[in-house]
Image 1 (cartoon, one colour):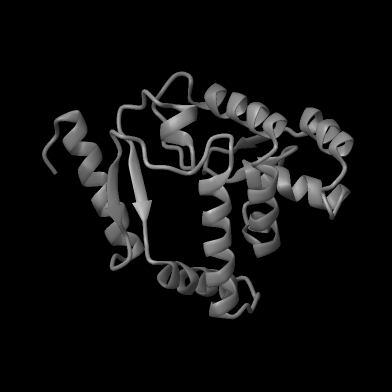
Image 2: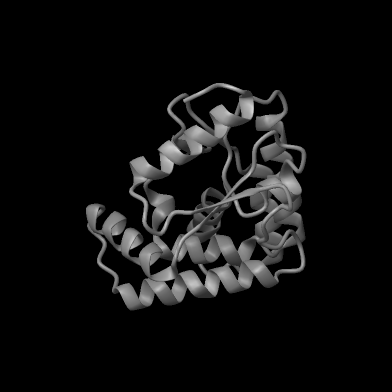
Amino acid sequence: MYRAFALLVSRRDPNAHDPAQVHELLSEADIGFDDNGNILLNGVDVSREILAPDIALLASELSTNPEVRAKLVEKQRAIGKDGGVVLEGRDIGTVVFPDAELKIFLVADAQVRAERREEELAKMGTQISIDTLRQQIEERDKRDRERAISPLRKAADAIEVDTTGLTIDGQVERVYELAHKKIGLEH
């Protein structure tokens, strides 16, 4: 959701330095999901566009804005108010849904994350060096850990899963196992 908002901001104010513009865009941003989990911005699927590195960086910067955080947390809570949802984000288990039934804190080595990101971007036709991606990931992590509002941190009751050596299927399998264990089903 932060990336979708960042995309909207970048389209209107590429430097994102105008607080009045950000405020105005917050009221006009209709961010949600379709039935397939694709992110919609004002009714248009922007799932692919929000993966751009510049959008990720802008989203991290905008996430330090208290007004942006308040509005998007409100939207996230509305989406999950009835339960039965899977949400991911850097403050979902600590701020947005601190009473969630199952909290999983995913971690991975920055180099591996950069390699995964490079592969994902290459499939979209975007080439960025591993070193640049690793630096961006490390900067974003640092900024998000140090922000005053809703910093990135593991909830005390979250289960940490290191995905460094796991494939996507392996990651899904591990989360699936944890969810089944939580609800008392054997896998």
